[in-house]
Image (cartoon, rainbow, N blue to C red):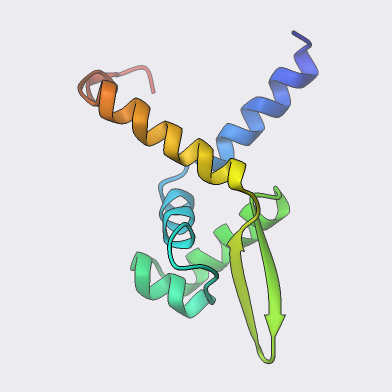
Length: 105
């Protein structure tokens, strides 16, 4: 496998490696697109924190946004992103004790 490919894969997983970004992706994975205000309400994160993480997720292509009137709505960009989250939850269900005890990361 090429080092450039591994570097890109690591960058992708860094997008999922932050608790706030995971909360936001979780909020966006149900009930369709949402505004920043709706995401703040659902995640209990601060508005500046949500906005910063939305910018990161958007820049990396994990979410998309659409303006409707004065508001911007955010949603997950592809079914593959949802599939990664679903698979991660499946792995956690199977290995949660080991992952919880892991001291390496």
